[in-house]
Image (cartoon, rainbow, N blue to C red; front, side, top):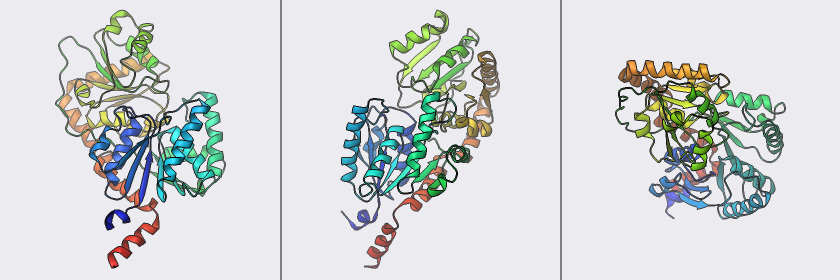
Length: 396
């Protein structure tokens, strides 16, 4: 190991599911921002495409099966032991957990083995008790969160918005957050060069796109109710894990007419969503809860209008976006009307809207700005002994 390598602090980023989703994308952004400032190791469940980017970086990748969320205690215990063994082999590193299971297990290890995990950071990709979660699960999550934050060493807690940070303060017992180090770092997107948009063929109505896995969170059933109320010429593209599965299609078949079902493109997981965004008029998000959805920021970057459920995690994007609609998912007819209006407005001046939307995205959510903020955050989180060691190496 050369002198420069030895002065860089160790950083362990722990994700969960290995498919294409928000957490692997966030970790990709983090690795890109900190690759020259830290010796990075990424830990995740089995890679299913989401961590392919690591082959082009200096980061190591370790697989720990079971980091995907699960309700099986035996599997969770096995995953805990495996994760503890990996962290034991990486002493003096800052551990930064992201997925829900990773956060829970890392906190347990930090409490029981502070020598193995002396410094822990957590990013809240959505608060686990925000509105939209199952009631019992949300109540249990709030209690567990309070208990884990009450004990052990102070943690670096990274929120995606100031509003999320304040919701956490209100949800926890008085002054509990004060014993930790809260930070706010909004998300970004980095699609890069975008293809030219493809005009709709004659006779085709609103072209709607959704990018998200088949899950309770993403609330595809609400999207189906909305799609039922769009014109018979509308089209819907579904990208994300599970959206190409036969069972998923069968569930939608029970909610849609055969004609409507035939106007849906079931794409499944994709490594590059840009071609699909270029063929769309509106990005739709019907989630029950979100943090700050990177998929919506990607649509923002691509210059598309966005129609999103009016939930806490979408507020910042909806406020800043020049052509957006807040959807009340309890009223599918009004939501469908809003989506159709966005598509009509977008098509009336596609080039102009794309330019205006992209310009706002570039001023608030571009990756260069995010990288600078992330690097400043990391310099504050990194062990101070690293700076002293670096100074000593230069002096000698």
